[in-house]
Amino acid sequence: MGDFVEDRWEWKLTWRRTFFYHEIDNVAALLAEIESGHIHQSSRDFLWWKPDPNGLFSTKSAYKVLQEAHNNADEDRASKIMWRLKIPPRASAFSWRLFKNMLPTRDNLRRRQVTLPSYSCPLCEHEEESVNHLMFNCSKTRSLWWEPMRWVNRVGPLPTDPKNHFLQFSQWNRQSSTTKRWELLWIALSLSIWHHRNGMVFNNQPFNPEKNKLKRLLKRLALTNPLKLLQEHNKGLDQTYLREVAKEKKHKLLTMLECDEHDARP
Ligand SMILES: [Zn+2]
Image 1 (cartoon, helix red, strand yellow):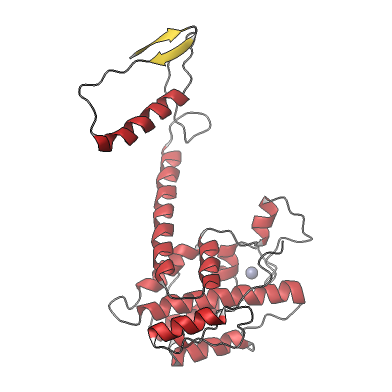
Image 2 (spheres, rainbow, N blue to C red; image 1 turned 90 degrees about the vertical axis):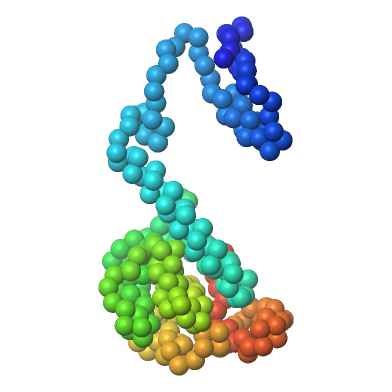
């Protein structure tokens, strides 16, 4: 297996056969991994459970490892569905940041050591603002999701993390050709919530979905094809791109996916 040469362990591996071409990358990865470990002549070997800082195995830490792997798989699935949609690049970029929890919500800014007068949700002031809370759990936004659920007679709690929430929406009417309408609606609504939240934070605009255009937007989406999403607040969108997609798909692709000029601000 190997020897110590001047206090440094050198691996001497013997192999039962020569490698196939397709195995060489795996062998190189294995060698790099075992080379990265430090073997000390004076220390005894012991077992160390890496996911726990104490090195001790616990079912809790094993569960966490499995859960993280599961979450990554969900994120991949949600991202794959989203990237296939014909939507403006800024809408895809927004959705991707939402799935990755990379929007500058107040909890994320706190983690990045940005000092703010308050880290509470600007809509309800009851909880710290996280993307899960703001989008799906806040008393001001929850009911906005109930509205489209009523159209398909769905009730009950939905997941509060964006990728699972999105997957739940995309699973409705799976057999129907309208599936993509739900995915588009989901992105349009999340983007709209984020846009209105920024209007409130940066321009002191009121957030009142009962009266403002969010409610009207949902009503119109109920009646029209979400591909014909509103173009009322499209400042900054790439019009040439929209026209190209519309031509290609033979649709009038009117897009409401509202742009967010405040995304880059802390
Ligand atoms: Zn809130």
